Amino acid sequence: MDLEKLAEDIKTWGKALGFQQVGITDIDLSQHEKFLQDWLDKGYHGEMDYMETRGMMRARPDELVPGTLRCISVRMDYLPPNAQFARTLKDKNKGYISRYALGRDYHKVIRNRLKKLGQQISEHVEAFQSRPFVDSAPILEHAVAEKAGLGWTGKHSLTLNSQAGSWFFLGELLINIPLPIDSPVEEQCGSCVACMTICPTQAIVEPYVVDARRCISYLTIELNGAIPEEFRPLIGNRVYGCDDCQLICPWNKFAKTTSESDFHPRTQLTNQDLLDLFNWDETAFLKNTEGSAIRRIGFEKWQRNLAVSLGNAPYSDSILDALQHRLSEAETTVSELVKEHINWAISQQKFRRDEDPPTANERKTLRLIRSVEKGMPRDA
Image 1 (tube, helix red, strand yellow):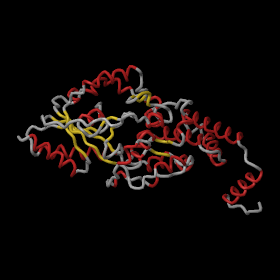
Image 2: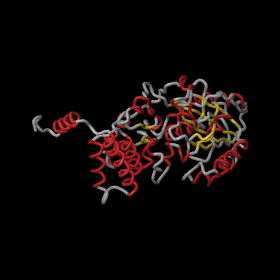
Image 3: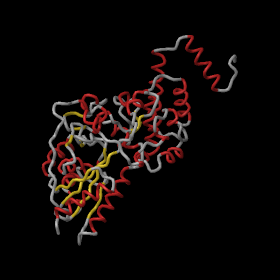
Image 4: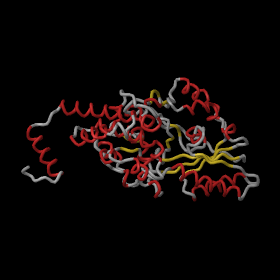
């Protein structure tokens, strides 16, 4: 078997399947084991117990899939045309959803492509075995991508590519043939600390180290209980995930837009008012998040996150009314977790109202607007 030619063919087949880059590496990740253990010992994984349960397996792919000799690492761009991230983030009445979650669930898309790649390789190699993974197994995917030459690990712990920034997904195909491996690229963050500086909760506690317990993505997605009060005001209008460290990264000026329609934003999730999202019942939530990564957090955490963002929004009679109305349903339809966050949001809205009460003319205008909205005559 000509392994050099096979490796080149695999990269060609991968790109034909929609991957922007394909790299190959061995499975020796032992240099990351001490870093991983220190991270776990400090409790930076928070409630993600599976991180500790699987322990060093994350750095030992052959323990995950016995017989593994190489890992094929792939990346797929997900930045859509006309992304307009900052516009939604700046409008505090809009719900900001992390870019990766606005389209179809990437786990399914990339896993299916990796599976097809494995099938294509098996047509040319006897006794070939492979297993695809996309955030679905204990693998140090960024370390693998770095070793396979897809980029370097930035100070925010994400993979950076000098020609594509960081707006891309990663996936791995573990295989049992000794293909030639690719070389890592040079780290190019230099003295830049923009991602560390901009992080709203200062979750990047030192270069390349993220304390998940402070990270907004963790707080709004992985955390199952109450969001600590110290972080609630810092979350702003981010209702699912956070992109700040990527938005500020200078390398993302080189990011390429995706041609994958599956990753284009869904209308019902894009640029939506917080109140409109908060008014979804569970049926609407399940319908509007069908096939989306958002669905996995469940309706309860969705409501929790929206309550926090409404508490951070500029004062509005409509917001306060909606929160109080939802609280009145607490006996039958609202969990204690959501109720706690609604109470917090109400207190924030009332504080903002009392701190800067409207003038007489503003009150008159607000009454007029409400009367018109209710279909009442202007002189009522």
